[in-house]
Amino acid sequence: MLTRFLEGTRNCRKSDGEMIQLEYFLLEKQRNEMNNLSKTYGIEIVKKYAHFGETIYTETDQIECLTHEKEKAKEIIDKLIAHAVTPVSMIYVIEDLIDETPWR
Image 1 (cartoon, rainbow, N blue to C red):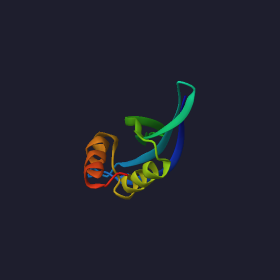
Image 2 (cartoon, one colour; image 1 turned 90 degrees about the vertical axis):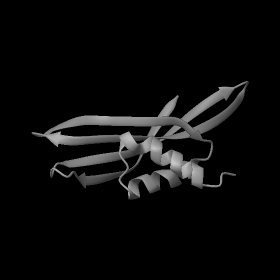
Image 3 (cartoon, rainbow, N blue to C red; image 1 turned 90 degrees about the horizontal axis):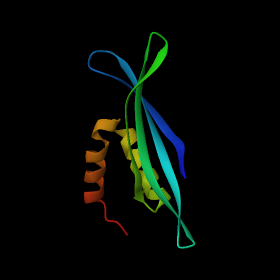
Image 4 (cartoon, helix red, strand yellow; image 1 turned 60 degrees about the vertical axis):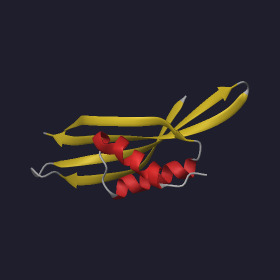
């Protein structure tokens, strides 16, 4: 079962002046492998904007199983929020973060 937790939002103005909202979710997936319960954590980013009062979802992307450490996933989400990372560039940014981060 996959559970989503909203960790933060970021409002941004595009070069054409249009406002967009980015939503950053922590994904938690519980697994039962050979009677051993474990959790994995991932990230989802949703990009949306309002058009004549109606919410339009334009992009979304997710990585369901990024780590077994909840705090590590939250650290990555905080960096994504701080730099207003969009769904389109999420995978490339996370790859760069993983390459430069010493994992335990």
